[in-house]
Length: 422
Image (cartoon, rainbow, N blue to C red):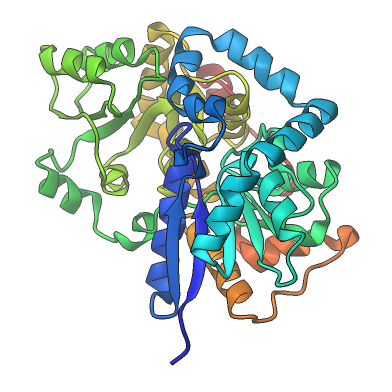
């Protein structure tokens, strides 16, 4: 019996998205190839030898986003240029070299994939000196506005969420044959749970027929309490699921509210796909993970917070394809909910249809298949050169041929132009 192939998954805890993508890949690999692979998820920043400022950035991330959003945006944009990127890569390569070298020695992987951009310089520098080549992949966890640090032409392959980011990668110098349009990995439970909404709602103790809004928050969401107050007094029959995302202050506040509609309150959950399948509308910020999971579940979104920088593109992506709207104030949220529910929910139904059209629920399996091919030395799908790069889309996700060709707004009806924020 051949020994199992070992796949090392690197992540960080700067936000939820990097870890969640890593967990999704771990689950997909073990579900599909569990008898033949061994996976390990590692956060290299847990090593005390990693740079102090990087380790602290994980815990400081929330504080910067919430208290200094414009300063964060300024730093993000200033670093997203060729010269700063080069200097950052050279610095990180030196600072993380020992950590990555020891990690490789301890893990002895057959392949490596990273859901965090800052490890690429050090890892590719080490791998480039080895006689035995180890495939090293990166998976991008933002939908549209993507920092230059994600793009490193020395990786074996780069998984991107859509054609827009694929073209951006080529503009930044990546070879087309290294780019794979997969979508952002979402948990396989998004696909595997085939129960009806009514069945899931009954299990959760919810009303089976009421329109259900899922509100997902965190310490980085500033306007959630005001939004929940609007929904509580909306006046139309609704029910609500609130996930505070470990924001203890928010959880205490909603626990003390006088609710006029059926509500389920959670501080933190591990069954988010189940809650999504039970819901009709997602209320959240424009994080790459939550947006991707919502699209994969066909959930239209009302976005109430957008972090300047990387989340701006996520919001633009949702709006461009008509899969949701932005509500910057409680009054805008009230108007949006009213417009979505008019005419037997006509606008809501179109938003939901658009979300389903661009969602990629099998994304984690797509990445897992490529990794399995890499470690089992199977021939990868024939990669076209730059002139025929469009073929990559058909090889990975045929259903995205039309929507991923270009990032342009869909046509809107007169009702959407009047009532929606396109």
